[in-house]
Length: 202
Image (tube, rainbow, N blue to C red; front, side, top):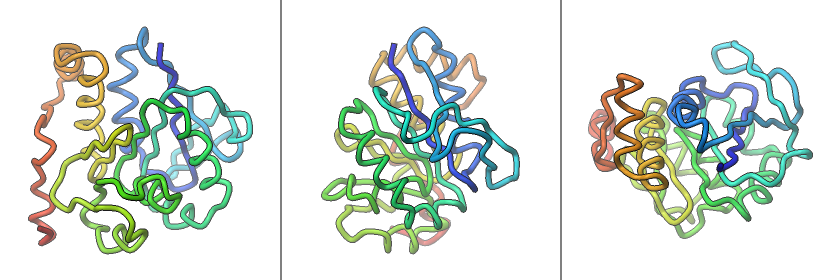
């Protein structure tokens, strides 16, 4: 059983979070999922819907995996010392650190992606790459894995990344079974990225 902490903050993107959690949650005997935030309790998404953080950053420890969504709230969180300190502490012993969309900006600002390849939301690309010049930003990528760090492009791309992550941990067939159970058309190629072309990124 791998324990995953999913980080939420005011203004997080719903599908960034719940797309991957739905895929992982289908394997409840393999993954235990917990929502964490700077302060335990309800946290409003960018759409206004609230999710309940079970643990605060102070009380959060001993997790094997970390998931960071993006969303409009990341523009505030990059200047939040509590967020940066938590990411640095939580990533030390994590087997997997994954981000969706502009969640990668939080990892980049913390320094965790220094010298690594990563990607992010293509519509916000200029802002993303301005967050750190120490990251090898990959413009044309659905998702990128570099060691324990997994980063995906915008929103729905997190589902494709999470299935690839399942395949890497539990085998291709398990990931195929999950995508079939979800009736989801899984894009298996990490280099498949029509949105980079759409926004003129090469």
